[in-house]
Image 1 (cartoon, helix red, strand yellow):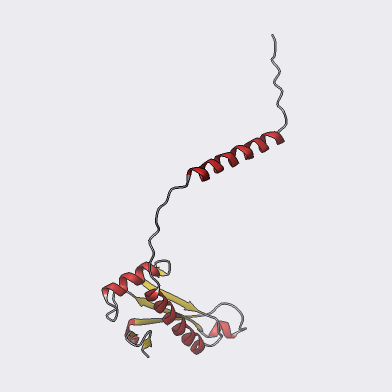
Image 2: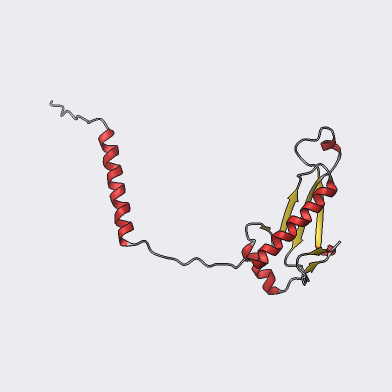
Length: 145
């Protein structure tokens, strides 16, 4: 079953790997018998459908979700493997679609203004004075011999 991302982009089923395991959570003895948890694994590097530009965009936009340049998604919301498979495909296609559409923004490095620096230092001084006022006075006695 091929996965349709957009009208032009369709990921063939041989590029998607499936893994099944036992799900955690409610289900009684059903949990111990049936492997209803579904995991999709899609390797970006080995993909023949995506061009180099699309691969780079996905690497930048989905860098928090990638493990060894492969996108992994696990679903265990339902007690039925078929429902989890369908939900995983829907989530997976939306993740890839959003990853390709979302523009990557570079952060402009800026310096704090003089006023904000001055305000920060004044706040720190006030805070230090407040803490000093809460302390007990220390009395030092000079011991005479």
